[in-house]
Length: 449
Image (cartoon, rainbow, N blue to C red; front, top):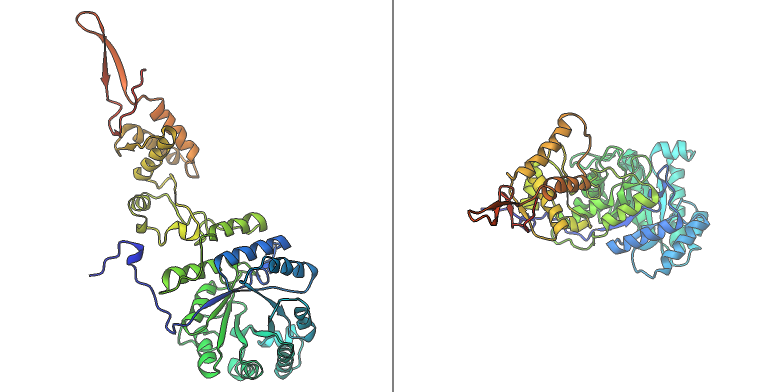
């Protein structure tokens, strides 16, 4: 019999090929092209530092202008072995010369657009043969000048792969057998399903590169226009790719790229024997991106949203209070997050009791336990429900408001009432009544009305 009562009880998944998988980052290259944001030099350096803390293997960047080169120099000055800083170029010698002019960069990506709209409409080339010649000449130039290469096969999921792209890749491999072939799902038409042929099927494309063309370094670069960037990236790994190119928070043009944090979390928590990345700064990283660069993070965004570890509804909060495994798929500290209990219109008595106890403990520096049927607790619950029933509230009850309720019902309403009466001889006698102390442990110091 299988019992799943804790995170460690759950089985993990094996990668079918068992290959080493890695991540390259494009946050300061593709991500920085996101409309409406500006990633400044000091931002890029800080992003590089976070990527180092996580353990990301490679980072790609433009080298076109002074601010690009200044950021590269500052990153290099930090002295980190990883992420390796790599360049990016269009398929012409002039661009590649710019990469060569930057000391310390040993690898560059080369853009090779392969769909007909890109070849004929964007680039204005007369035919596919002209595109192939352009790309191979640029690759040869980079190799001749000592650079490692990545071929960015742009818009591959809308291209004629069997008749044009796969033959082009064969020629690329003849020039540079170590070239990384990047499958670019440029506008998100790729799908992660097996049995779907090219141009859409990521599994089919990856397996063809691996099994038919003997490509050793296969990388996916997926956009999220149809919401499949992360599934397509995982499908790449599942069918033999060993790299995925991503951005933090999935930032980028249009609907963005595959989200690094989602991919990292899945690999770390769900894949057997995989523990190469450190995610405890992910929440901090996301706050930096939100505050400094202006990325608006939905509160329900997985991994980094404010609500990821927030619990309000009665059933959920009661379960999490007793055992977080009940409704949390992984502990908050894995990504540097924090568990939060909120009191709202769907909250039950259990979360309210937890919040009141927490508040009393902070106020009085005493470990207090309140029973669920404590009249004061029920009074607070009635007050809160009245707000929602009368449509006078559209948000959760804040910690400050909980504090006010606690002061009203627990601090100003005495926990022990002392009464004075005379005995038969006329002497004053103290008599304690504990009518207000039912449901609270331990007893507090006596208070006189």
